Length: 303
Image (cartoon, rainbow, N blue to C red):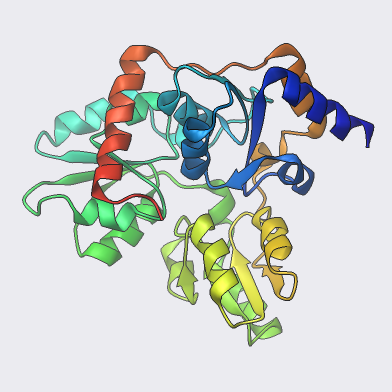
């Protein structure tokens, strides 16, 4: 395909690598040098020798890459690719909440803006949120932002009471208990995997609550041949590629993140041609946000 060849040639000229999130369209995942979850990709951006990173995901992911690799050029092929969950809390709102709980430490999910990370004590991913929360001294209050359902998952996993911000992922909350029941009735032998951004009611009726990276590893190791997948349906492309002998079924076809589908092959090409859209983080914000990420890694590397 001529378009794919143009991208490959220009990628060499720019000395660039293409990173794609697990929720991206299949053709975007297929042309990427690395496919993974948001923080894993940011660490991959930091580790590569490439000076230009084309980040096929949403804004907070590209920002995280810029926080960890300030010397590199981070490009987001579609500047409108935002994250509704990340947008549900601002730095000003977090500062106000912190003033109301002066003894509290803030744990912020990596699905947040650079400014919110900078106001936080720890970052976490969906893979290590329980460990991060569990590492904080029992006498300290904990504010958890912005995803209330991941916060509830942490409360269940640690027995800690958290001050939760009422944010949520619109893509994951559309997955309902009825969806899970209907899928299980259709595929009774299938293992049900769901993301901890799903509601508490869904969490109670699935077999495994897993981050996207954990889903990929679990499916590889499992002896099961059929899986019901309770997260954004883009991950099924990778699951099928990695496990051609197994079957994967979405918990619902409604679990689609429109922002994750904004990036196309044409936009990747244009991004490489014009070096657009560059994502930068002011140094005063970047240093504080990086500190929160470093504290997370000091507790336990993402797995």
